[in-house]
Length: 174
Ligand SMILES: [Zn+2]
Ligand SMILES: [Zn+2]
Image (cartoon, rainbow, N blue to C red; front, side):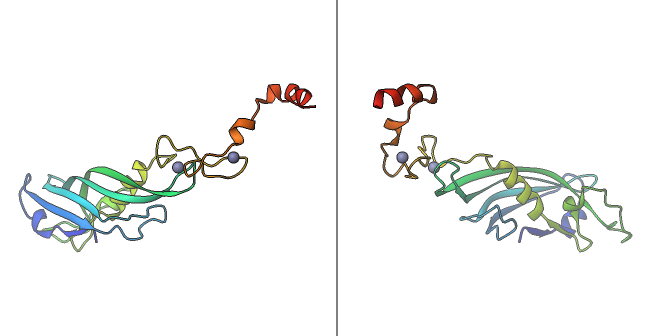
């Protein structure tokens, strides 16, 4: 999916580059990421001394539930990739190279496949707002009557009395 064979680029000199246009569905890489549009953008691979530097900007649109009104809405997100990938075998000798802990997702496979899936997944998760709201003005659901106040205002607000005055209001209502 977001896999690239970099055997050719690894054989080139430091500074050599390749660019790829990405237009791929994200698929079900994460239950929290429900993409309704393909992941689109351009990534540039640059041969570095140690491996391949991946830079790029990717965007997609996700289906998210608003924390106030609980309705789903479409949230566009953009991520910027800047990650260096390292080969897992020496290209000339074929010997295995050590993979450092925590660098598994930025390791090029022995078949020279550079897989961006995990990096893309993590960056989109990071880009997600902690408390997504459908609009800044979302009125949310009324805690008293359950009405979605974006659809139709309810009249509960008129009856809500500050708790400090509740006792007094009760007296007056008698
Ligand atoms: Zn909302
Ligand atoms: Zn209400």
